[in-house]
Image 1 (tube, rainbow, N blue to C red):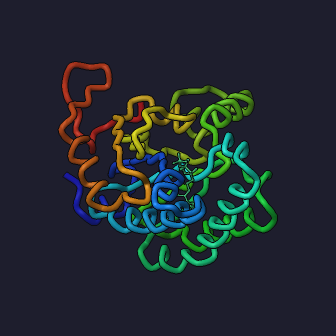
Image 2: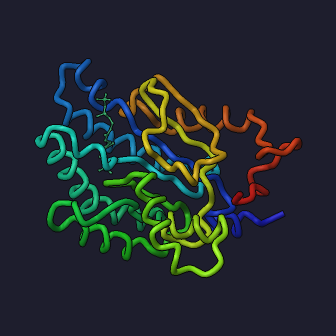
Length: 246
Ligand code: FPP
């Protein structure tokens, strides 16, 4: 049995939750607000969930903020989303450091507007010693592209295994597979999110719009998750702490 201190220091010993934060636009439109206001409310939901996650046994939280297909949205909305991201990186880092959150960003950086890639690098460096929560934000992200890029680089790696290939996909060693993927707003699809890492993820779909999501909603999703029996193809249930990276 690991001590609480050891669990706190090792995010891989705690759950990895991925969230497809959907419904900002509908939430806003139904209230007669602009879609941008919906995305702003979405940032407030991010704050609530990042604060609540560590106390609920979550060590890694991956949030889908902007997919590589989201470039197809109207230019004004893309610009607004990039503006929010810029604002988040500039204003949130101090709170992340204070709360022991390590931030990393996954996805392409070469298509982001000027200054964002360097702001990401600075935020990652400033938060690198956080152990309470590993927060991963997916921006210009496509799981299929991540797998494709890993395949292109795999030739340079000697003997490939599922683990070493996973490291190429995620860009880090030994990241825990995703235990639970939550999607808000009633949509029921994965939309190119964590396709490799989520091979055995439990899926939780809620009708709640992302701006309405909070620590209680996360607790509901986790309670449903803990009622599931995870067998990973075998016949006996496996406890979260013993989950292997398959
Ligand atoms: C989906 O809702 C949401 C997005 C495409 C963007 C998610 C972005 C945020 C939560 C805020 C920005 C993030 C950061 C990290 C600063 P939608 O717009 O597709 O909603 P709809 O389906 O109701 O139209």
